[in-house]
Length: 354
Image (cartoon, rainbow, N blue to C red; front, side):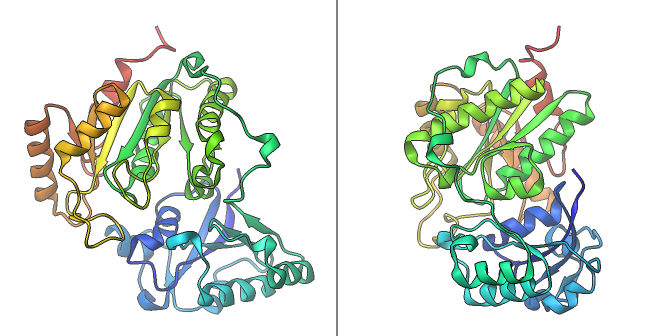
């Protein structure tokens, strides 16, 4: 696909998990050519340096007007980079969307509110002849799929990445692993399960949290089977959602049941002591997280992956060593160590190559 020039809007959220859609697009996207990020709180900084300590040439700007100066004369996209609680669009976001429409930008929004159903935005879009793309809008129920029990027809190695918490970096790890597999000469597809993965350009994906519950397992099975039928990759890497024990964003069991993974990875954020968004709810110990997942999945967790946010390189290395000693399985910081040990696990399960 040809990347679309884009402005990413993340005002007042860039330093929190509410900005995780913007974070994903700053780090990696094949769908958009991100020209600028809008957040007046952190204006003047390089987005890559702000997020990961490595500059990537994407400026953080205070206003949409400044960001427009980085766009082509005609066309382009305004991407809502917010991931708010409940998927609502705050008032400052409404103002920014309206202004972006008057500048002739197509609007991409992954929140639970649908811009096409908003009379103000619909009329403005008609007047300025721009598109409103509601990424999270589910398919019509007649287009949904019920679980058929045919996942074993998929001969790709099925890798599932779950997390001990929401916003734990599961999607980013999935992309890092997919790219590393391709660098090693293996064909691999990333199966997105949320709106940000679609915005990043995942060829195969669903928006799991907007689906009617009866069809969730079927849609997961269908998208993995479609990836096999259309691309026949050696490996599919499936992005997890939420966390098994998270009280507000429980997730994982339906993915385990539908994907029936060959490789099961569990991602942790060791520096995080409470659940994302709930400072009064302590994070359950890793022993309980592993026990719950393994009892429900009926299989072992093959490896732990580490999100090192909030840790020094030495601290992250110490955590990995401690986890390996305590839980007798690899613990990998893919952002610093790379994916070689995970790829060795995957290669041991390959079915598509002799």
